[in-house]
Image 1: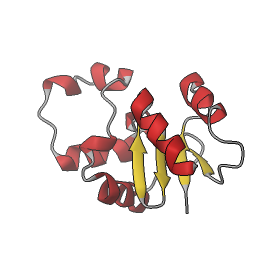
Image 2: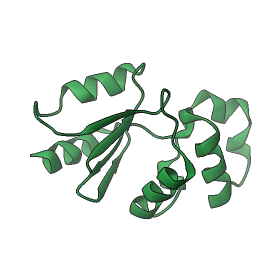
Image 3: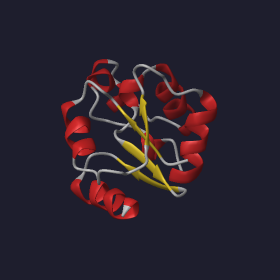
Image 4: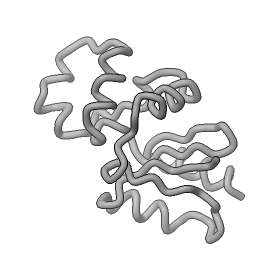
Length: 116
């Protein structure tokens, strides 16, 4: 199943979704309305290679909790990803067992190419 994990209230995510080919066939998964569970996070980690690769350091919560001053382990990254949706670097596309993480132009372009 091809899916995109995104935040419906995020303008950047909405802009990216509008840039996708019309009949992209992706399942849209709003991570705020349907938080990711352990099994889903683990499946994403298996494709991405690490929980850290899925983790967003841009989240305000990351700074307010002082996480930038800590040496986080993979277990920590997993815990925070499960605790709050804001820690997932978004959007996350899973297309044909390949993963494209974040809103950087190169990552989005690769996801669009994978859909074509």
